[in-house]
Image 1 (cartoon, rainbow, N blue to C red):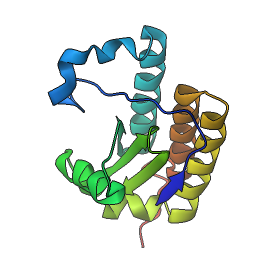
Image 2 (cartoon, rainbow, N blue to C red; image 1 turned 90 degrees about the vertical axis):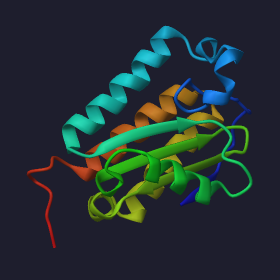
Image 3 (cartoon, one colour; image 1 turned 90 degrees about the horizontal axis):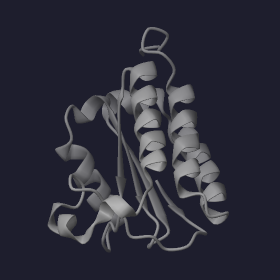
Image 4 (cartoon, rainbow, N blue to C red; image 1 turned 60 degrees about the vertical axis):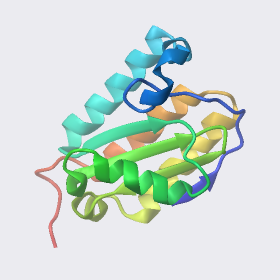
Length: 150
């Protein structure tokens, strides 16, 4: 799912997500408090749902969906994973789910989370938008014991 953002461009990354750029000082893009908020949101979403939530922030290249799917596939246990790939400079958000996580996160739920994020991004709140999007996805996926299997 692709959604156009109405936000200012940012070029962000970490040593793990942009190893070829590690020497550019990406630890200064986010404050310690912002990194802590992102980490807590990812941890809580994963803990509450039993799914593996990951976040990638940076340029996705010309074929954003294909690149996001490649990043998702490289992560551990892609079947039970959810990747939130945000490319502020391209104004794109990609949500990639594996087969098991897709059963708990239908496209409509992902679209609503993306809409919420774009509203925050438009007001200049990148971190808040991501945190709220992760909360929405987590709420929709629910607890693993309460998840229905079909």
